[in-house]
Image (cartoon, rainbow over all chains, first blue to last red; front, side, top):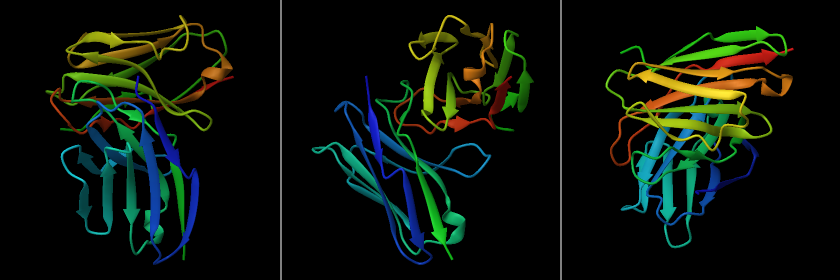
Length: 112
Length: 114
């Protein structure tokens, strides 16, 4: 089955700096790669996703890149703000009727 | 729609007791997942259903865990008997079966077994 590795497990950045979180996956058949943000005591919520037919997607300060050949994808947050502090999870799945397999998460702290 | 609804939000029980967690998926969704979250193991998939049918329960840790989905709007996860190592946050998520769709999570049930 699919295996998703995520690095780093913790990340501290100064407010205004960029943050990058990287994930690798094992199953070349995976074609959907979402990123979830989980604030303390709350549920994971989707912030951005990418499908295998594109290499990059942006949404304001957030971007995700995908390299299918190398089987890795990354989340980039620019101009970080204190409210970006949370745990971020990457995930991968094959098509829509198989479950998401999650990475272990990255705890991001943005220091004001 | 109110989103995925889980109950209870918090559950404290004694070791050996039966625990039942409940989930109501988003109306119209036909795929439902149960995840367990701990600091050590992150978000682990326990079991998932497509059209109320269990597809893969290989993530269920032991026979003490069981899950049912009697209809499209309700699912339960039962632990009998419960043990302290079952303490975790249990999330239910639902989605619509088609290529590449978002999974929506419930608020989770924080289970503490003492």
